[in-house]
Amino acid sequence: MKKIYIIAGLMVAVAIGLLLNAAQDVSTYATFAEAQSGQKVKIAGQLSKDKEMVYNPEEDPNYFSFFMQDAKGEERKVVLLAAKPQDFELSEQIVLTGSMQGEAFVATDMLMKCPSKYKDEEIYIKSKQGTI
Figure: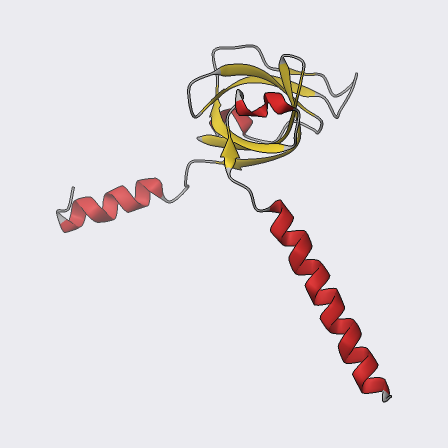
């Protein structure tokens, strides 16, 4: 058997492995109630800005806790096992990956949707065009 066939076969096997791994990560968003099963889920929601946020980098730089409301309006405490992101309070929406542990949702990964820096410019352009 030629070396080129062996290399091509290995590349196909690696590509299939990568596709299977990516397919496992594709999931729908859950709510806190659905996360009670203890499985790893993704939850989208909004920060409860009126509740306490705890982050003390001198004590533990990988512990940040806050409260969040999911899509159904249920509010829970969230513990993020990472540093507090910059401009966290400005986020419009938060997507967390993690699982429920007791009454708190323990997140290992977080994505934030922040306000667009182009929003004011977009409003200005639309007002000039007369579409607003």
